Length: 613
Image 1 (cartoon, rainbow, N blue to C red):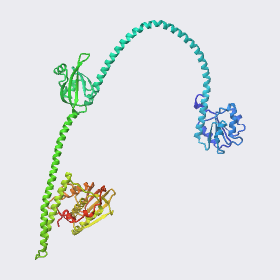
Image 2: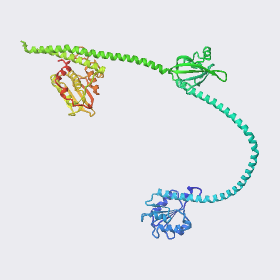
Image 3: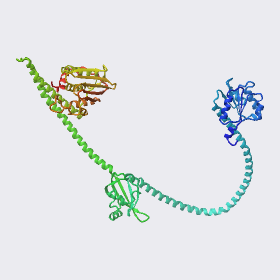
Image 4: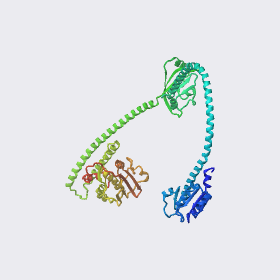
């Protein structure tokens, strides 16, 4: 039994069974796992005699034996002196259930039930073999321990005697040394006091030096120590943090003079003499210093003489107060003040511009209102006038004048609104409204006008109702403006389609025409202010170039986006996406009558005022 592994694989395993079908498979599995000493017995009458001839290391017994059951066989074996310590594992082949309590009463060690898990069989066998191995080892070593214990007791008696002799000898020598020790004791006390005093003095000096070095190293300001011959003795952590250099990088004052003007006159005889004779630090002034990474720092430098070294050299200290951030803050503050002044001037300019456009709006609208009034009176009088040539359109020139008045009003409104948007004074009044009905009503309000131009108008939607928040008047202005462009650039016989798609979290409005289209190089700039596709004076339509820019701004004020797709001679399509949201704490749903009311005709006349027959 040199080791546990040899004990496992050389162990004698006995299997007792009668018609146990799994025994053959179990023996093969045990052979496969390295167990070679396996014996199988089928008859139980002579089992005890056979076992005693070659005592096994472990026994596996089938509980359900025919001639004698496994419990009785185990009880018989436990009465034999040689078999009492052999581990016995019961196996149930599927007959009567194993009585666990009875197994341990008759002296069994373990049990297994079928169907057998062979890995579990190996684990159980190795567990009990390991226990048996340890018991053998304990018995083997117990005899050795008894022999060693006897020898130790004998040696202990000898050693006790020798120890007694030595104690007596030591006592005798101790008495001889006692007198000498007493005489030296007083001398040691005196010497110890002197040594303690010297030690305290040295420790105090070391502590003072340590504190000085620590104070310099951990000082929050950059510090450099150097001698009058130009050697840098120390630079502290703050100095390295600011400059990025270590002592070994630049060990000479002359080299520091290459990166800062502050060191140019540092070793001059005049400066050395001045520092040596002065009891106060000297302020060198503010200088820039180029750091290791190439950046520039601004520092206020101070110098002072602090004493002589052991070798006789004079030691000087230079302190650099970093004022870079302070200088930057001063410059930034100055810049902020200038920007604040410019902002004030811009705001003042915006205020004056807004007031100017408000005033000019009033000044321009007043004469136009007077012209409208005069035109209305003139139209009333024309009703009573009868011309000889009845084919003459007596309202022709009043219509032209009214159309151009509307055009001036549209231009004034667009300029004022663009100015308000730029200044941040333009507000939208959102209400919860049915966007589908709103756009349908706007479309139908211009249906007669569009059809009179020889165009067909189609309205289509994939949802009947969609309540969302928007400014109805601004939505009306967006739709009318785009429809105005569609009418303006679509020839007679063409088609204009207004469609709405519900995209759940947003609504999609598409206005498509079959007009002349927009060149590809103009699509990116179509929404820019004062941009027109045709800028020639001979163009066949009118416009200021503000309308689509204003449309885009109104869409974006609703949180939406607008885009355009076009192809020459095939038409143009404007696509608008507006996010669906609701106004909180709305008192009541906005009425369409409030949006599309009696002034609808006037709004159409204004938005369509630059379309001439």
